[in-house]
Image (tube, rainbow, N blue to C red; front, side, top):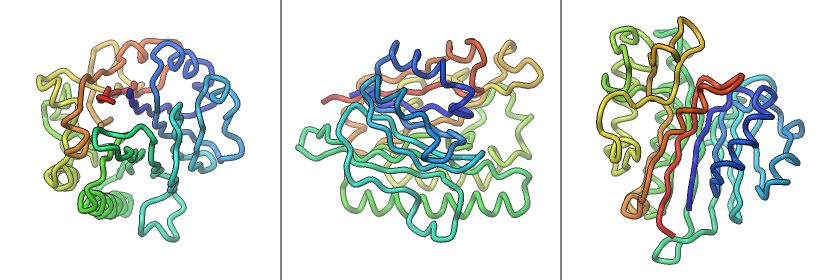
Length: 263
C-alpha cells in the first residue's frame, strides 16, 4: 500500500498538476493539506474519475485537509478531539480497509499543523496547544494498539540537519525549541519518522520558499512528515520525496512525501 502526503497550497492553483501527479505515481491514498476550499466547492469529480474516494474537511480560503483513497474508508473523523469551537480545519482521520498482517485495518491521520508565526504571540500559543491535543490523540491510538499513520504538513523542522540554513530559522515558530520539543515528545511515545529511517543524512527537504530563489539554491527545509506506529514501522518497504514536482509549472512550495508498506 502506497500512502502519500502533499500540501498543495490551494486546490484551484493545483487542479491541473495534481491529477497528473496522481496518474503518474498511483498512490493508493493521499492526504492533502491547504486545500483552501469549503467541502461543497472541492472538485471531487476530478479525482473520483481517477478512482479515488474523496473526503474533505474544508474551510473557506484557508487551511483545509482531504483524503483521496482508492481503498475503502470507514470511521471518518473531522477535527481533533478537543477541537470544539475551533473553526480551523486541520485534521482528518479515517480507517483504511487494507489490513495489516494481523488482519486489522490501518488508521490514517492527515494533518496540517499550525504555522505559529509570529512567535511569541497568540498564534504560537495556538500552535503549541494544538500540538498538545494531537499528542493526546496519538497516546490514545497507541494505548489502543492501533496500526496508524500520521502524515501531513507538521510545520516543524525537527533538527538542524532538516534545514539548509538552520541559523536563518532560529527565531521562527517552525524551529523554536518549544516546537521541536513538542514534536519530539510525540515521536518518543513510539512513532517512527519514516523519512529519517531511510534517508538519515542532511540535504533532505520537502519545502522551498517562493522567495529569494530558495528552490534554485536548494535552500529548503523538511517539515512534511510521515510518522508510523510500531505496527506499521515494522512493515515499511520504501520512502520517497517527489522533489521534481517543485520544479514544475506553477508548483506548490511543498512536494509530495510517500511511503510504501507491506500488504
